[in-house]
Image (cartoon, rainbow, N blue to C red; front, side):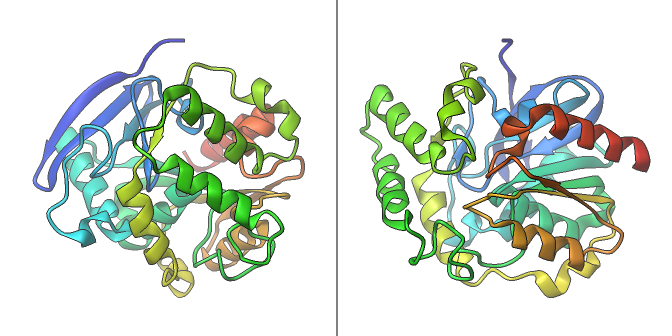
Amino acid sequence: MSRWKTRLVFTSRGTFEVFIKGKGRPFCVTHHYSEFNDSGDYFADSFTDRYKVYLVNLKESGNSTKITYPHELSMFDAVYDLEAIREALGISTWTYGGHSTGGMIGLLYGIHFSASLSSLIIVGSAARKYANSSPACIYHGEHPKFNLMQELIEALKDPHLSPVERARISKERTKLSLHKPEKYDEYFSLPISKKMSASRMNFFIREEMIFDVTRQLRNIMTPTLIMGGEHDVQCPISFSEEIKEGIPHSTFVRFNESNHYPFLEEAQLFKMEIQQFMNKIL
């Protein structure tokens, strides 16, 4: 598997580490608290066969700029950072694809900068706080695996973890979000690795408690594809359905054999649905 090309992009809002792979129309991917490297990302890799993908490390991640003020870790600031990166790269419009918290950033992007987006793809995400809103969510205190998930997240914040121990804990955390956890090694078979930005995660935990853009979804004018796994324990599918109801003329796809990772759990169908959507709007 080829590595991603690393580039530092200098903008008016700071310097950002961006990983680039693929050819075709420009396609941006990020996640609120993931720290990427040149091994790539499973979600982003789903698009590199047809698009030129820009995988962005946000502030406090990898070699991107450190913050001066706490608000720079917000999802709203992330949108402005992505806009600065797009402009610095000389790209007029691009597709934004976001999974989970990356999708939450994507919704804000579409609400405030639809003109910058040729299309928007939101996978396994939510338009409002989800942790306290549904006991079907593994971050809700009433979910039977809530405590286990919290223990694993806290463990991953330790910067002194050995690579072996980090990999073990990450595996156990991810298996909680698979419809068929016994297939973990099949799904995650590539030499892709990433870390978690503890500062970004800690800020997100607070921000998520007040996050609600449901009444602003109607402002998204970009062609939007919403995708959700029927068995998603992180962002239950009811939240994807809510996004579909809020965005005019959007398209919704349900993955009946997926939890939080339809791009791995039903990879062939996922790619087919992406291509059908893109063919329809271009």
